[in-house]
Length: 230
Image (tube, rainbow, N blue to C red):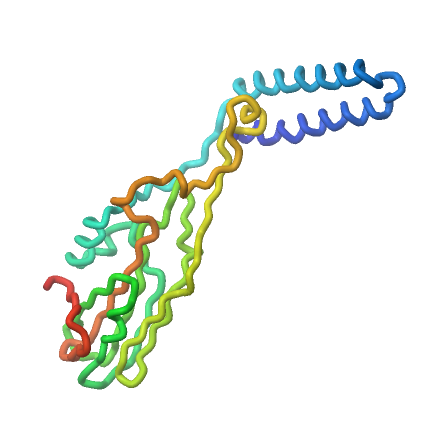
């Protein structure tokens, strides 16, 4: 809807309400079939004028975010090549730096994690395990729901790396299709935007963990250790 159209719509509604109030006030004079015809006729006249005005008013559109969604292949390439920061569609959601001075870390609990997990090694033994939670493709039709996404819980207990996924959540995005005046003829109203997104190759809200460990730390308990570049 244009900015001017947004301002005119309330005026039209108030005008219609005024007509109704006048009809009620003069109910004795315009009651019965005659009064109904006058009311409907007035409404149709206002509706017709509104449509004409609607198409005569220039539309002012706000600029949309131009971030392009990435495919599974593009996301994995960015991870394996170590250039995640070069893609606007991949964003760091949360970061943990956990002091750890042991020689071994058990990552067996991560096998049951419903999330891609990749590992990287620091060039030195700094006794810090860095865990970064990333989310990709969070922008849809100009709306970025990045802030709505909860983060997992990350900790180390008894030399075990523990990651607990956030509780199940859902995000519903609705928008108006066609303005009030036009929707009475063409249809429209509120629609669920996500229902109209059919692109399985570019996953919406794709998340993964990057775990960066000290150079000589031994990872145990799992056969599914995916190091960047290996």
